[in-house]
Image 1 (spheres, one colour):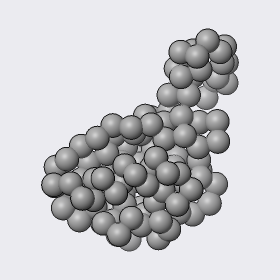
Image 2 (cartoon, one colour):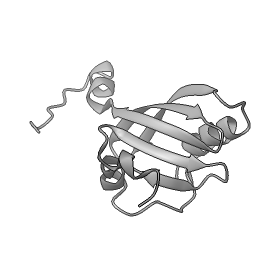
Image 3 (spheres, one colour):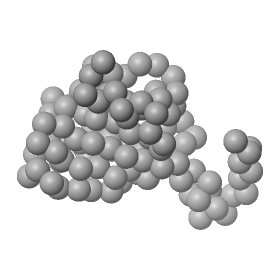
Length: 112
């Protein structure tokens, strides 16, 4: 058990990324979204926007926060990230339906 195990069952999509751009921990929702284990892997290796945002935060002072969008397959997440002393914390919510409505598409989400 690690000090970050508490995030596993948190709602939304949560990740902790170290200052070498590697995932330290992700919650269950994000792990399910990726469909494979990302812990220990480079954050943003398949998404230029994610890599750019993480690298900007690594080079920023502790406490810096930023908001950005992450796109994975047909999913769009609104991400809020914060530079902590030893890692970056990312918290996201699924805004796919909202983005589709903004673009004039009709999306029907199944009841969960």
